[in-house]
Amino acid sequence: MSGKETRLWEMLTPTVQSLGFELWGLELLSPNRRPTLRLFIEAESGVTVDDCATVSRHVGGVLDVEDPITGEYTLEVSSPGIDRLLFKPEQYLLYVGEPIEVKLRFPFEGRRRFRGWLMGLESDDVVVRVEDHDYLLPLKQIDRARVQPRLDGAKGAKEAPEKA
Image (cartoon, rainbow, N blue to C red):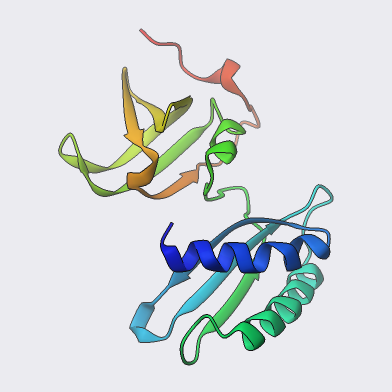
């Protein structure tokens, strides 16, 4: 997470929490020079379109006052969805045993993309099993990690492939 994203996270978390939601994650994207701030909110009871609109109004007010993004920008608020991005180490632990796709900022062992099973965390590394090999991918080098939905409904480490 960049310094600006960290500042935005710290600035917006209290507002999102005061509305009864968890700030699951945020992305600050700059396609075509007009930034997009994308927030992902979560709640035990789920997230509705109305919830997203409410959070958007409140967060928009904070952003207008604090003015952390120079110039015009787009604000998007949504739920993380079933193919959710992972932002914090504790989020990875919730999905051990699930299929995952990881994109790194820089190549590791000659590649930037890894598709496999999330096996856990070891120190500051995410353990991803691809076929029969476990890769320890440094958390700080992960550009994007997304849990892949499974249509069979199974969840958890018990269903993860056993190491050969």
